[in-house]
Image (cartoon, rainbow, N blue to C red; front, side, top):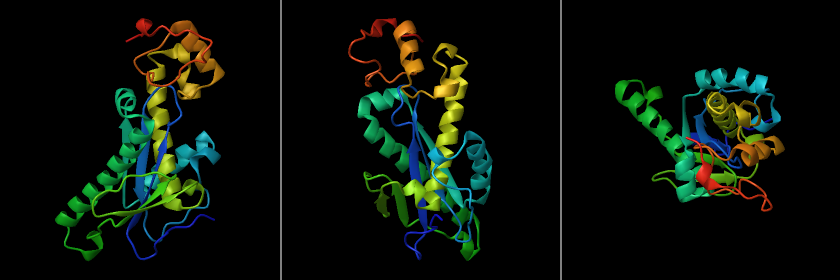
Length: 220
């Protein structure tokens, strides 16, 4: 059973990313602030769930969460600042969306129950850069230990999958609706045959070294 809180007395959100190891598409992060009464036996690390169950959980999380944020960092920025920095930035931006939501809600309401201020971040993994006025705890495999991180993993994964399914229609030969941009054999064979697109991360090793990749044949 996943735990609800790391610090029982702090207002605490969880954050996670999806798509860090992909060859194409954005890296996507989400942050989720759950209510103290939240429970769900199905919710766990998105990688352990079927696509059907992720899609079932997404609207439930969005409805039950006190606040959430989702951020795409696109391919050009990944190539500029590297995937680690892009992943952290996506998580930071998603947390900032929660802060903005809570601030607006507090300003519009006279109820003390709407005066929440985010205090702590649970981060999946072992790297993060601090945000002003917030503490954070990095937890390796946190998406299988804490509900808020698991919820963030669901929103990040479903948002990114939806993006990849949309751009699949533009370049169906890469079958992104199935591989979601990950380095499958099928995806790499398509890169070898058709070259790269505007959605590919040019700073990544897109093909094994024995293959020559002509970057001048980029599409789009």
